[in-house]
Amino acid sequence: MIEEIFALKKELNAVILAHNYQLGSIQEVADLVGDSLELSRAAAKMESEVIIFCGVDFMAETAAILSPEKKVVLPEISAFCPMARMITPKQLRDMKGIYPEAAVVCYVNSSAEVKAESDICCTSANGVSVVKSLEEDQVIFVPDRNLANYVARYVQKKIIPWDGYCYVHDQFRPNEVLESKRFHPQAEVLVHPECRPEVIDLADYVCSTSGMARHAKSSRVREFIIGTEVGMLYRLKKDNPEKEFYPLSEQAVCENMRKTNLEKVLRALATLEPRIVVQKEIAEKARVAITRMLAV
Image (tube, rainbow, N blue to C red; front, top):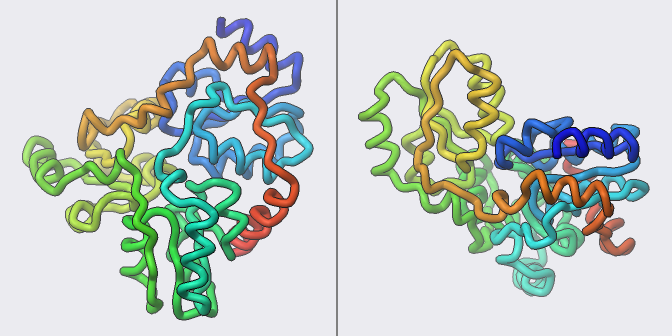
């Protein structure tokens, strides 16, 4: 199957992108493994005609927005982000009506339609910088309340969070951190900004998945407790075979990230379906919000 995937990829001038949370088998056949925006930005610069995006729906949409001339395929059409569906464009418009003076910052983990209603996007890594770049003193932050609360720690603005969350990161609890540190007293605790404030308070480092990858590689520490989706550990162990990585919770699994497998990647290459196409008007508006972020 892997041989067929590589043969078709070459024939179609395709690139396979895999998010850090994907299965190890998917990461092994990918041309690039990273976080969602990192992958979309890289894809836009590549000369490939086809992008096979192994992740969830909003990631493939972002790639399609940044690379409108390319064919973007999501191997499993039912792979979606529950948090991205916790806010609709209408709900955001209603919120903008309540706070007309506020700027709207939209986490990239959102639909193209919600991005199109926003002033600027952000990632878990650059949320603080994005909010600081705005002239407005009030900021509507959608859809993740935990990331909004994390950003609020470092800015002198009123952050108005939407009540959405990532069910994987929101399930972490302080007692799990304390228990993990008791078992691994020499380990550094790395958690994602999508975690609850009380979990973030107990961490040594708070960073995006790409930030975790960079820190684990550069740190002199040999052991790490990882507070994010367990798929991240595959990449960390592969990049740092001499170091030890422990999941903060074995139950930190995104079911939708697990829907993509080698068979579906092969089918996606063979059929170029299901293709992700964003309506032109929506894509143009969403591209403005994404491009504004990239300028920051």
